[in-house]
View (cartoon, rainbow, N blue to C red):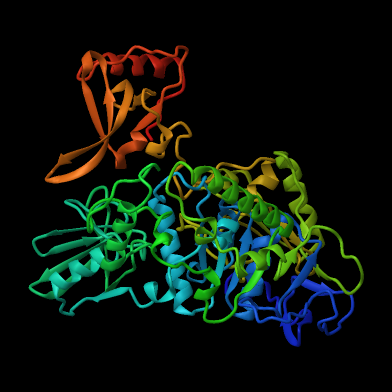
Length: 599
């Protein structure tokens, strides 16, 4: 198991979680004792609860850089599903990325939540949908897994378990399929048919070639059919459309956790038709065409909490229980206050339909799980982390070299330097070439579990996204991250594209007469929402007025191309459609200020 196996951490200490022996070299008790319901590590619960109540309490003297390895260690030893709940998506994703250095990626999942203001009729980002579907599928498989999530991800309600369970489609090379039936299934699973398959949730069919972008793999898959038989399955590059890797099978997960049955779609449509016309209402979709807003679906379908999806109660870990509680109560207040205000203006689902204020809320508010605490132990019976904080060198490379020499003189120590991106890895390799540093996982461009093995060298370098290192003195291991060495954190890749804060997210942001800026056409004036026939279907459009009385119709699904006007005058000059004035002004703006960023 990579790092853990190499460190030979087994049988170093043993202690008990409510009559269950747990062995790991990262923790210790001052005295070897067995805890019961009266001790600090375990609490008794009168009511049955859907989380593991055997592994609860606090671990003291936990450094911030050791959260991911402690969670990974616990998962490896217990082989049970663990939920690590952080205050927000950023913290959860950081821990997930760090854990990739300790456990195989198949044992890890990241479950993000929606962290924007509710009641704005926003569509959830496709990347977030993709991560959530992968996480939900893994949870439903019943296999032990280490899950990193946020307060919003944990509280977000989900469709009934039967809606998602058993919905995956497995296609195998050499097997025959009913193509027409498969296409219908894909649409039922939330996939959209397009001319060219380029993004998650799309599929295309050209002759005997079926392209599908599922969340199961990083790249989309290409199914080559010979009649009804699957002749080959390959991944392909969505940009170049070139085939890449041969596969024996493809697993197609639902494209959306909000897939609706035909009856539910009709119920959704009828609900909008019968809603209070004095409220701002979204466009009414027709069948598989149009938008079914995630925030409104719970009005026609009962959702449930995430704990209902687990076949066995998961263990919960809180890297910062106080931060989780603070975010929890803030989220509750935010949803309740916004619902009270917005429900007078727009159609809204009550907060309890969007977030689970039942058992999930109770579990977080009472910190029912294992909490990591940075403070020293209160008494000799407290559980204590053996991992110590790594030294910080603030760019003083000579001092790092001296530290390596010092540990070598003591004998038996192993030093691991980590870097989060390839260029920095090469830089560190050059800086410590004389120290005989060995690069681990040298062919990898993503973090992988690293093995110290039986190398004669005692100094290693590995690609890893650890933000801070640590010291394990009883095993003579020192881990130094790039932040420990250089004294600053380097910007890491984000999984979700940030949205421009000035971009309009919903038509309810606009009032008649507001000045706006279209990214391609410049300054215009918002007139109204107008229902117009386009492509044989009626759709709702933003109607914008430009110079000379010209009108521009913007589909609601392209509203992110429009920004509210912010300038030095309340009545700006309108741009002209079809002329180059706006293009010239953008060019001047780019030279004088920061580059224009596409939404």
